[in-house]
Length: 194
Image (cartoon, rainbow, N blue to C red; front, side, top):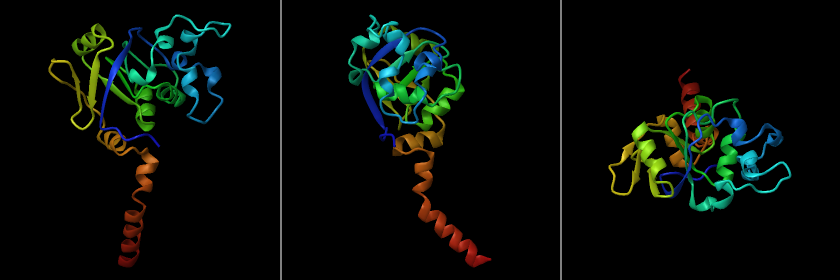
């Protein structure tokens, strides 16, 4: 179950590469598990480790992931094949939000279902975030705003049901399970009316 999300304030990490696909986020050879935990060590594995398993000079090896929970990514983030492991790996690494000018639809769907907030912004907002890497940014899901410094808040949109699930800290099945009593009452009333 994902943690509830209403607001998050964190420093940003910027990866400006365009077309970061799901195989770059987590290479296919690590898709042998159905468990979410432990996948963070494989997030961007081929960027972070050389062929012998030694760490590269990737910024992903130099930061404290708990202090940089907002990833600002290049255009067309999450393209490629569908794999829930990609948002799982990003979240287990430490990210809770991905911001880009374009995020692949299937990645967006998988992210929202698993507690990772994908935000699409306009080019001007994105350029400002890239130019100020490491700044404190607040993501306000209740207001659908990105706040940073003394700049005017940038707004974003998110599908309403996905927003509700993120704010309640449930996935689709968890939301449905939370309605079990209402469903049972409806079924009883329906049965009595027949």
